[in-house]
Every structure is written in C-alpha cells, then in structure tokens.
Length: 244
Image (cartoon, rainbow, N blue to C red; front, top):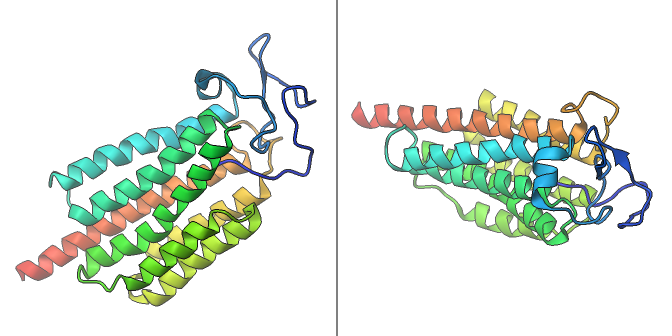
C-alpha cells in the first residue's frame, strides 16, 4: 500500500527528492513519498535495491505466495478449514499481492488504485469466512451491502478512505457479533494499529524495517495469520459437532 498524500510537494523526475543509496550511483525515491513523486523505475530497483521499498515488496510478496499455497492445500483437503480457509487465503493473497505489486512500481497510479480496491477483500473476507466456518448457512446479505460501501470508499482521499474501511469492518463485526472472540479482537487491534501507521506514515529515522509503513505490513499479515488459526479451529469444532 502506498501513500497518496504528503506534506511536501509532488515532484517528478527533476525534483529535489534524492535519497542516496548505499549502492554507488543509485538514487532512490524518498521513503513514504506519494505515488508520482518519483520517476518510474524498472521492476528490479524497488524489488532488490531500494532499501525502503524492497521491504514493502517482500513483506507482502512472500505472504502472498504462502496464502496461495495454503489456500490450495485447504481446497484439496490436505489441511483443515475447507472452503472457508481457501476463500480467505484467496482474499488475503489478493490484498497482499496487490500491495506487493504496487511497491514494485510505487509511482504507478493505476496499480495504487488497484491496491486500494483489493483492501475490501480482507474487510469482507474476514467476517464472511468466519461465518462460513461457524454457521455455513449465513446470513450473508449485509456483507454484500458493505462490499459496495468499502469498494466505493477506495476512491476517497487517504484519511477518509482509511476511516471508511475501519467503519465498514466495525459495522460487519457489530452485525455478526457472535463471531467475535479474543482472536477476532486481536485481529481488530492489529488492523486498527495498521490503519494508524498508514495514516501517520512516519518513523523514517528508525532503523530500516521499522518505519510506519513497514509496521502496517506486519500488522496486516499477523492479523491474517490469526484468522487462519480462527478458521481452522472453527472448522474443526464444527466437524466435531457433526460427528457428535
């Protein structure tokens, strides 16, 4: 996920943003700069060389691959969780994958918007798959309405978009209150913390890997891992009830 707004001016190729890299002769985009603040670079620059962006790329790129593999295993019945887990892994892979791809080309506005549009996959996917794991028959109608709202929110400015995303998740958890346990509470804490890190977009004087946007990535992935545990346990409990 990249930042659209900055307190500084938007600069192009001839701008004054010139963070010097450890690699001789290379200059990288400033950490946390908005899309469009830097010229377009080849895919390998941010993936392997840019010390700030490569953490963003790999911190969500590797989880993307992991969720794809786990989802396939769940679909095949190799691991517990069934369709609910495979669907959640798809949602998590969409959110993580679009984020990683956006950081490969962080100055591409189209990729940035695709990234925003993929965030609702998690906002809807978490309660939807929790319901599937606990009560497969639903109801699901509220999720359809909130999916429309969350998708529309992707076109708002950063602060309002973030608030709308948080509000959408809050409405769903309020309606499906019976899915909430300590695991869900921990997920909410992580996701809200991630939202704060996204909006604040600071900490660039800290050691590399501990900037706010990096912490956002870690929070999102940690919350997703917790939800994998949630679905697995819920599915196993449901199976035990059926067998009993």
